[in-house]
Length: 256
Image (cartoon, rainbow, N blue to C red; front, side):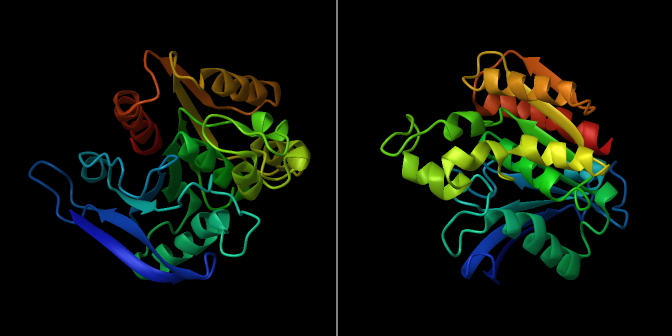
């Protein structure tokens, strides 16, 4: 199994940055030889995290897929207001193009998936909906679907995680967020109105997770919009125990 840490100049960020790639090129005994084209999972970290925070090492060789792991700081994987904060473009366009040219990965949407946890769960759903012709499947665990909360924030406010200025930098002007493309619900409605195919979606959250209600709300929204999706709840809080269990379920759903 090859594990790369790649440094390159990012036009989206206007600076050098890194990402990590895992490619199962040396199958262990009893595993099949890697096939081409190899399928690809873009795996997104959570708030305060970084590339490689959690990697299901035992699964790529079994299911013949590579993992691409960007480091996106605390960006919510959105194009922020400041120059050099275009993290949506980084993941949804720049990295996809880079791994296609360098590794011949992610060549077709049916071979390209995206998943994440917490902030990365929001990022996975939003990025997948923003680039429906790039990503075929989306997996989102314990997702920070906090866009409605952010939309109600006022200058000088915030929550226990960050202040108003941080959320404004990530999401744009909060008072405009409900109708902004930074709201994944807006992207769903636009795709449906245009008759576009929506990637397959798998949502999961622990029943004791502090984000359970926003996840239930997203599930209800997708049901109301007639968007087919998998939604799973199980015992658990916002921790690696739950994510370790459900990343395996999501990988099987994506690649088995």
